[in-house]
Image 1: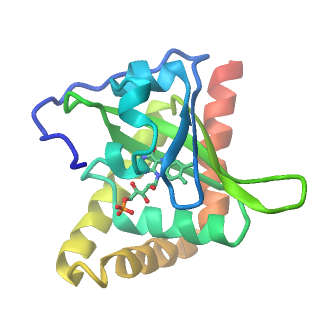
Image 2: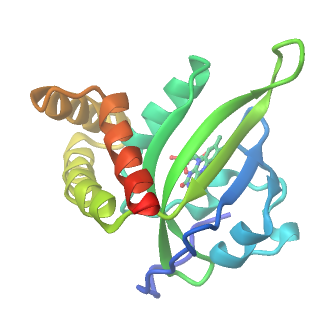
Length: 182
Ligand SMILES: Cc1cc2nc3c(=O)[nH]c(=O)nc-3n(C[C@H](O)[C@H](O)[C@H](O)COP(=O)(O)O)c2cc1C
């Protein structure tokens, strides 16, 4: 299935207490979606189950972010990130996402699990220019080299600020937690 055309340009917001939850199989095909995801993304359960999760991929999102996400998950670790997604009618929404591997009792990988909430405006403003730069780097690098090129730039850039990707993501998370408890 292809992404919808970029006709809409309205930002759809989650309520402060709303969580978007999905599960996938080990190849990233959706096996579960909660009602909030269906409402925000604008798809029915039938339209979602079995579909690859890139169904909602927004073209402003750098490939390097997903490269890092998959590397992290495949190393058995959890990933945090601020992500822009498409709705079915071409609008968009931002989430602060946590994605984790989902294991059974014998530590066999069942798939992946993601919980997302509304990020702060500050977190969105922090990542927007970073993602735009990564997209520029990707356009210049060509398709095959794009994800690694933009990811290398991101990691170098964060290192200059004394951050790893994980410590950077935690600042986005802390900020959101602080705003919620204020
Ligand atoms: C549990 C889980 C949740 C995901 N959530 C999203 C999401 O919200 N938006 C998105 O674009 N990709 C999401 N992905 C990543 C997609 O599978 C895909 O890698 C990404 O959209 C990039 O598309 P591409 O691999 O075709 O380049 C998720 C993957 C997993 C395993």
